[in-house]
Length: 85
Image (cartoon, rainbow, N blue to C red):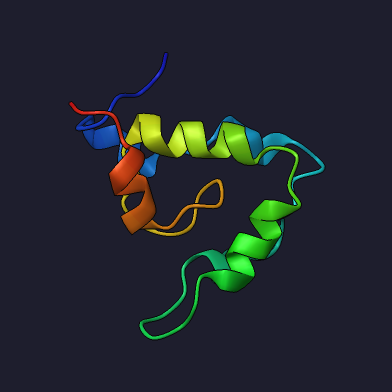
């Protein structure tokens, strides 16, 4: 079952991509949720070398993730490419 935006459970969903043994972000969670004033660039670099970034981005768009770096895009960047409800 694919969770859609506005599904209350989607905020707590986890992407299946995290089960891949070769994801580039394994162990780097702090990089993907920078504090105010910190840059997303370290996370963007990790996503740039990950073979699963497209799958990760698709999941984030499908579930309406509003925080953190997913698939190489910031929340603001995803807002521009997110399909309408």
